[in-house]
Image 1: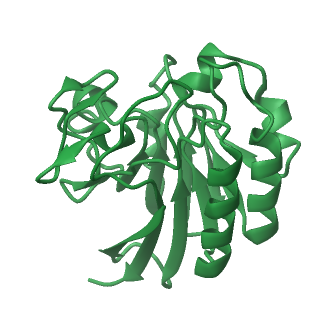
Image 2: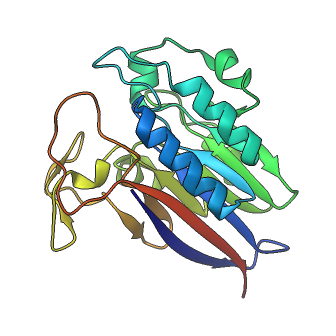
Length: 231
């Protein structure tokens, strides 16, 4: 596991911030331990968790709530469901909120007056995004699925400043910075790792799912986001 760092400049904030983005834990204990250790090293202002803490294939979920509790002890933590939480609904929104985490489900919260953090629930209504993108500040959307960017975010919601996604696992095997395969984008997917159009940031995740899927040239990662006040 590595720490991958990105810097984004915006005039819509009053001060600099450091965020950590985490995704795709899939109930792996060692990955959780490493991610928490790296996050403590970074000392973020907030932690943004972009879904798939549980693993629906192996019906595993023991790590999810303890992981969120550890995140909350480090910094304010925000969470949006991934497809694994939706298809294996062992935890509901109240369970997530009970850890002290800000549960975002087609909703948003305000962070420090100038940042609005929203969360899109997979397979759910998107009408709320119209109001979200009108918020008077820097908007960050947690949307587990990067393919949603092309489907309904890129052109239909241009005022959302930053979109954070996981799900693609970096394309599993990466050759010359190209992922080979991922769910919902299939062969030679476009959105697997990095920043696209200065708006969509896709992380490779903290682990793979329960199935044995090869991963090559594609380390798991904790994503550090430096949000800088600028012109």
